[in-house]
Image 1 (cartoon, chains in turn cyan, yellow):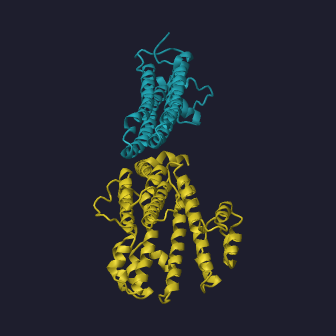
Image 2 (cartoon, chains in turn orange, yellow):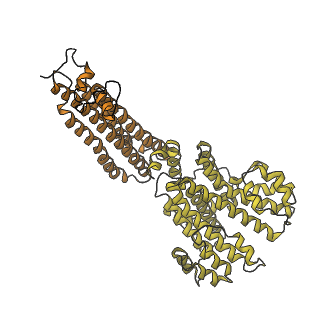
Image 3 (cartoon, chains in turn purple, green):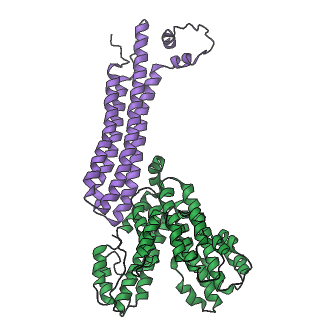
Length: 196
Length: 347
């Protein structure tokens, strides 16, 4: 029943019921619930990928440099914390998106085209928001990681450089924040609940 | 290049950080001036104890000879190098092995020359550079002909491909030894260069520059050294490596050169070399070798400016060597009461 609801959107009248004639048919037939949940998984999965990448890049340099310059140990953990923050952005967004994409009540059946539009819109919206957050956190994590590694190495040689390079990391961190903000704005109107 | 940055730390980030830690332990200007002000070698030992060298000389009874200082410093370098090498993974291991090959080549030639002059094998082995030791070095002493050398011993070592280009049935005499050494070195340099360019990214850039300079320096030295001997121009041409800033036009001009002035003319067009020759010029303060060393130190220092490449390991080994040379030079000057010193500081 759900699929026929969605197929109602396909106005080009490919009435043949025995297969897909265009790519459009296939894409339309993917349930909005699928789109939404893939978005949620992208949000958390890809962000964690970025954060982990960043942490290993920073961590290996930190461990090596701390052999000869033990004083840098505690200060440079800040770089690792910045990378971790990226993963936290991902978790927060995933939770927010999941509450929007949660289980619809069983009697969800908004009659007519308008309900179908709302379902599709929500599905696509949550998918895209998840992608936005995931990809921006991926890049942010890698960026903060590489800068953090250089920070550890240069701090080992010259302590005055630490704070200056930290500023670069802060700017890099802001990238992840951009992704979260845009994601929240995108999904402001999305919901699978019956909000008649 | 971006891909390089992102994935380098997986395998080699730790090693690079450690190498940089070693590099920050090199002596700096204050240390050098302290050492220069010492009056005797015991003072030198005390000064060195305050730096990264620590107590490495503490087991030696006074009076200490300069050779002991040289030996112990080299030992320290070898220790650090072997530690780095044992922890590394490919392709870093291969890269570090390439660094060792040049020492191996020197050792092999040393052993061959020594055997020819009928020196004691143990004495020879002690004189070998520790970074270039390998198992079958001792059995080299037993061989007398080049073909024997190759078949019995060298075919198992990594130097084998270099030998195949050099080996003929020529007898081992003074001149030919040098030719063998230079042909070996040429093959090694070209191989190393190919390896670095194949690795791509920042390594290719940095190491490419360093190796090109090394190749040119060899070319110039070969040309200058062959002025007094009966090495024909064609033989000389065969010994010059086929890459470097001077390749190919400069090399053809070098081949034609008849004397020092000719060499200088050949290198005129290349900015950095012109400066080197200008320094050397008409005063006897600085020899060509010293000018080359200075330039090499400057280049090696530059190698540390970039992150995420293997050049730092090579540069560190070379800088440490230069530092050992500096220390030995200062120690010798102190011992012989001559305070005129020629140093290149490495802060």
